[in-house]
Image 1 (cartoon, rainbow, N blue to C red):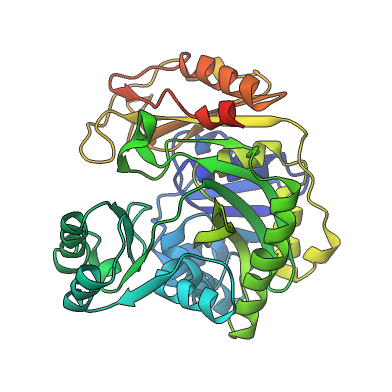
Image 2 (image 1 turned 120 degrees about the horizontal axis):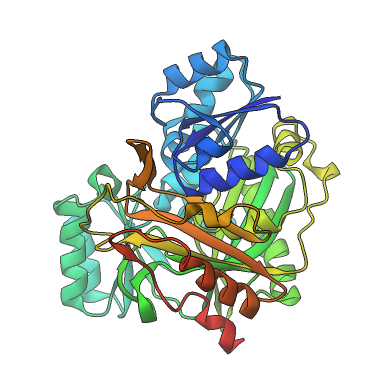
Length: 424
């Protein structure tokens, strides 16, 4: 088989690594890819939002399966473009990717189908949002830009003043562009956060192992929201009892709700959950693998990823049993100092060869590229250093040891990824 992967981050590197292990795969292409992905794939200089060019490339190279890694092209309708040309593609159509593309849509869906989530109101008028905050809100409160905002469009406001500033930022100053035309205001939930990724074929859902992300830039969960600074898998807080509840009240009902709405979902649903004192509730949905969740979940998966993805596209997922190793994985993101605000790029990365032939250690590239024969930094999140271990503590120790193997001028990381492991 010939595979095309669309995207350029650590998630796509993890997908390319998984696809390269498949016995069915002969050739892998990635558009646009990065320096690390080029180990497994031929990188093609076509942007992820250039749908027609990507589809033409897939036709020209007779690609058997295209895997869409990123949210923007999915929400923009890349799957519809590929399907119209008779190309096989893994990911939800535009009318299903709205599950991630509009927070207002997903909240309304949960309300209609009684899927547990935080209480909320949607607003498309900043004055009405402000009036609600001044008269009805209880603080802290959460403001969410409706559309895609690189994982950064969520503000937790402790005071009315912070909330008023947040409305201005999202709806008036358009910090996140058109993503802020509509805004969700919802109650602040407390508890443990857990991410659960799942494969879906439109009717059947098979969940992968659990993970936990660390969104804030700085140690102690301080600083700004980022795309994610590190993850661990599995979550010790995601027990068999929690899983049984989520399968019955959240996972299957979400897939059934999308089908009932005439929006059958095929691809990956990422469930962002909060384990509250009143039980698990949905924080958010994503319509693709999480980044850096993919970097701890995929190395633990025993299945051939291409077989599972084909089963999703063909509607035969009920015949697949997902299997995961009985171990743990931790990923620590190495970022450019100053991320997610302002940072320099173009620094040479040393020590990448240390990961060769080291079983259970992985270096997934996010913001990297080739320059003058060297691999240099090319983004806020640069590398994801993943290590496995027999348990979470060993995996964490291994991952942090491996972060010392690589260096670049403005290397920055959190030193408390997986701190919650000690509280389990």
